[in-house]
Structure formats: structure tokens, C-alpha cells
Image (cartoon, rainbow over all chains, first blue to last red; front, side, top):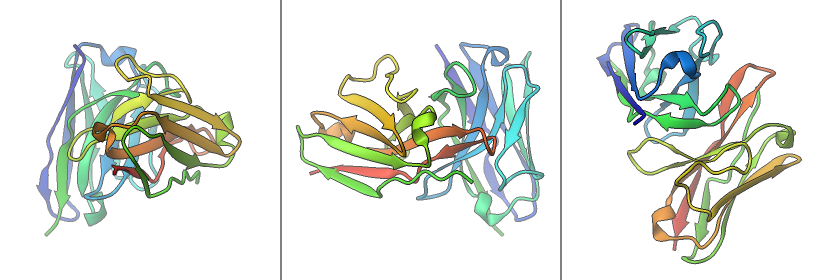
Amino acid sequence: EVQLVESGGGLVQPGGSLRLSCAAAGFSLSDYEMNWVRQAPGKGLEWVSYMSSTGDTIYYANSVKGRFTISRDIPKNSLYLEMKSLRAEDTGVYFCARLLYNWNSGLDYWGQGTLVTVSS
Amino acid sequence: SYVLTQPPSVSVAPGKTARITCGGYNIGYKRVHWYQQMPGQAPILVVYDDSDRPSGIPERFSGSSSGNTATLTISRVEAGDEADYYCQVWDSGSEHYVFGTGTKVSVL
């Protein structure tokens, strides 16, 4: 059974850092493209970052470029999002999600999300 | 940057048909995907590649796309369809994934 479980969220001060993890089960990250998507409280979905199945293609939303870094550990089958210089507008639930078959397909599996709150 | 515009809300009576539009420049040339999100839950893919349904999604959910508008149609609407719906595409120009603004479907 495919499962994605995020962790690592919490309360952090503006300017601080946080590392989110997404543990995958039921498939290998080396076979699928992956994304991070976030949702501010009461707002819509916002794409954050993408990593290809080979790991050699990475994209970031303009709002996080230069501050966030996506990475993965294949033996641990885990995806990560390193977040630095956090701002109040980074507050929200962060989801990891798998692309159905390639970079241009829909996101077929999502984790339950982990809440990040940036506040002093 | 590429923008996808959805109506903020759609109201529909049980048993009727709900149509949710997603407007974007030449969206007919892109693959459009649709998600359903219940309060406090992760989104669920209900239509991908304009009109295909993942396994387990009822046939009542269908999609189409042409020109500058994509549409998600929910036939024979049920109370359980009440949720937020988002369209999404890949914009090759910006190398960004883009989500629509979201539509809240209310069942009267």
C-alpha cells in the first residue's frame, strides 16, 4: 500500500530554519517524481518544489527559491524539505505528494501534511 | 506567471449537475488535473490528463478542456461531494506547477 507520512513541522521564529521529512512506503522514490505543496490557513494550494525520479532535476516556486532545498535519501526512501530564513507567509500545512506517472501528470498520492507555524 | 482562475463558489441541488470552470491562457494545450479537498484533509486526485479518472473515483466525475477553459463536471451531485476543488497544470514556460484559485462546492 502506498503511504506518505510527513513530519518535522512545528513553531519557529521568523528567520529560523526547519527540516521537513516525508517517509514513503509501498513504492521507491527512485521510480517516481515527487513534490512539496503547501496550504496557508484558510487559503488555497500552493506548489513549493519538485524533484525528478532520478534526482537530477529540481524546481522551486519563486516564493521559496534560494531559501528552501529539496533532497532525498533513497536507502531511507525519504524526501526532505530544508527551509531557511523562514517568514510569516511560510506558515501553513506542508504536503508531500507523488506524481502519477511523470512530471506532467497529476498528484495521485498525498501525505496527511505537517503544520509549520512561523511566528515570534 | 501562469494563472488559473476558478469561481470562488458553486452551489448545486442534490441530484443535479455541478460544473466548475478553470480559466487559463491556452489551457487546452496543457494537461489539466483536478483535486477534491475535504476540510482538514489532504487533496484527492479526481481527474487527471483533462478527462481520465483514477481508480476508485466515481464516473459522476468527468473533465474536459478546450481553448482557454477546462471544466470539471460532477453529475448527480451528492451531499458528500461538498468540498473545495482545485485545477492544476504544469507550466513549461516558468517550469512551475500551478494550482487554480479553488472553488467551494456547496450542496443545497
